[in-house]
Every structure is written in structure tokens, then in C-alpha cells.
Amino acid sequence: MAIANIIFPIMFIVTLGYGLTRAGFFNKDHIAGLSKFTFYVSIPAFLFINMLAAPFAQSIDPYLLLAFYIPVILVFVIGYQINRYFGANTHRTSDASAVFGLGCSYSNTVIVGLPVISAALGKAMIGSIFMIITFHSAVLFALTFLLASRAQQHGFSWRNFARSMVLNPVVLSITLGIIANGLNINLGQQLNDGLSLLATPALACALFVLGANLSFYRIGENWRFALVASMLKILILPALVYLMADKVFGFTLQNTVMLVLLSASPLGVNAYLIATEIKQYQSTLGSTVVLSTLLSVLSYSLWLTWLI
Image 1: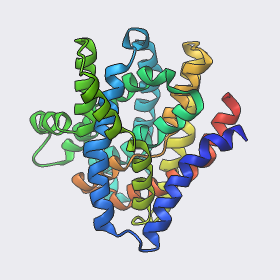
Image 2 (image 1 turned 180 degrees about the vertical axis):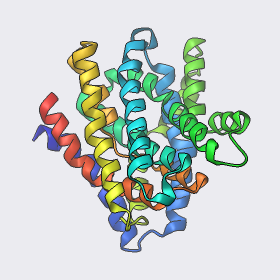
Image 3 (image 1 turned 60 degrees about the horizontal axis):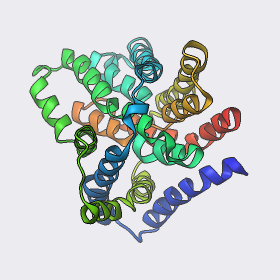
């Protein structure tokens, strides 16, 4: 029952978004508008407010970063090599392999991971969570673009990459929150209350939009590779994170659970957008988003039952 209490509210909102959109109550234009508000307004406000209040003095731990990112990079490399050796002959290129590696290792940390961890552990871990996800997109997207540039005529542009990262609303809001936290900036009661009100629907809207967007994707003919990517993402990656956190670094149970749940998050939809930009494995990563999200219910239940 405790596991159900954690998982049910999250899946209820995702299912509601899927069902209402699938039934035609919302169309793509409606969801596009809600998605724009969610990811460019509400979530940045949520991230900024929480980063501003996060107790970084107690949260900054380089070993937490190592325990999370060593397995993430390892699974990325495993996915890359799987595609190089077992992918279709036309897809054994470095750009396709980099995209597939991204599909095996990139987590939906903000939309799915954060609500699950908050429900399971409370908000005491929020500083450590944000410390980890601050580097998440930058590390994996940079690695993907660097490897993909080997097969691209125009090559890799650090300027374009830096510009896209700086202007990314998630990265920008986290960065500004860290700066404001470090400078001990006081926003004032009125502005703080306004941003807090704006941030209130962030996670619910994000989960609803996730469910709605799932109704637009289909598990296509590349389901076998999508299944491989999903298993690496929600089973192998969190297992490796658990080994690093518990056996190598000997973290407390709370830190171990936090890292495992973050890594057990399904594939984030941003990975699909990167695949679309590089023009490799779009349908496979779209299918992986759907499949890993559905299977993450079982994965979360498994890890929560075992660890809590």
C-alpha cells in the first residue's frame, strides 16, 4: 500500500492526460500551449524557487555525482557499442550509435523522477537532487553531439551547443537559482509568493503533458531496440547506480534511494528531440519514451519495494 500511495497519484495524472487527449478532449494545439506554459514558465519558476531555498552547504557532495554519472556514462557507452555491433547496417554509424546511447541513459529526472522521490523521501533531498540534475542534460547532450559530429559534415559547434544550453529554460532557471542562492539574494515576500504560486502547478502540469504527449507517440516497428534501450534505462542503469552508491561509496539508505530512483526514471522526451535534430533513430527513441514510461511503473515498484 505504501508503494501504491507513492506511484498512484503520479500515474493517475499521466493516465488522465493520456485519456483526455486520446479521447479528443484536448488536441495537439491545446497540449502545445499547456506544454509551453509548463516548460517555459511554471517549471522554471519551480526550479528557481527550490534552487534558491536549497541547502547547498549540506548538499554538495562530489561522490554523489560520481555514483550517478559513472554508471550513466557507462550505460551510454554500452548502448553506443550495442548499436555499433548489432544495429542495422545502415545505422551502425557514430551519430546513430550516439543517439541510441542517449536513449539508453538519459533520464526524465524533472518530470517523473522528482515527483517520485518527493513522494517517497519528502523534500529533504531536494538540494542533492538539483545538484545532480544540474549537469544531466549538459553532460549527455554534449557527449551525444560530440560523437555524432564525427558523422556530420558541419561538425560540432561549441558555440551553438553553449547557446542552446544557456537558453534552455531548465538549465537557465537552475543556474539563476544557484547564483541567487550563493549571493543570498532576498526576493521579497511579494515576489517570492508570486513565483511560488506560479510554481505550484508545475509537476502536475508536467505529468499531465507527459501523458498527453504519449498519446501522440506509437511503439513502432523498431520495438525490439526500443525494448533494449528501455531495459538498459530502467533496470541496468539503476542497478549499476545502486552498486556504486551502496557497495563502492557506502552511502546512507536515503542517498542511495534518491540516486537509484533518479536513474530509474524513464527516458526523457528531450532525447527524442535530440534524435530529431540529428535525424537518427527518431522512431526508436519515440517508442522508447512510451515503453520506458509504461515499464517504469514496474521498475519503480521493484526498487521502492526492495530499498524502502
